[in-house]
Image 1 (tube, rainbow, N blue to C red):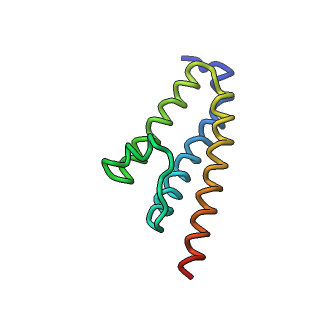
Image 2: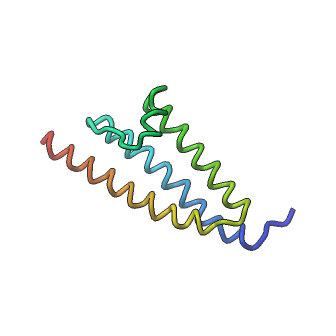
Image 3: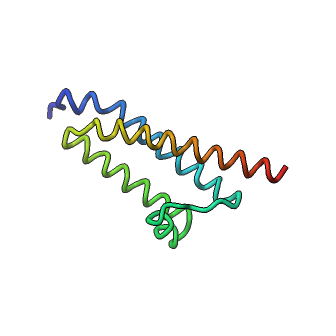
Length: 104
């Protein structure tokens, strides 16, 4: 099966997306351990099964949706979403540093 040029060009964005999902998962778990709380109502609802389990489920769903975007040749959606998740990770890191400063 030959991969289309558009799908091939989407792979770097998809790889970045997966890495950002992992970073978001890790920084969110750390922030929760430091006393933070999840503000997204959907994620908060998923976390009823357990914080790590709910977050992991959300990340798996996000990766499935990203795969669907690649399949439908909508790589630009992934690229724009990467900016959002990069900003979200910066926010998480800011909250982590603030929490650590409070404990010092």
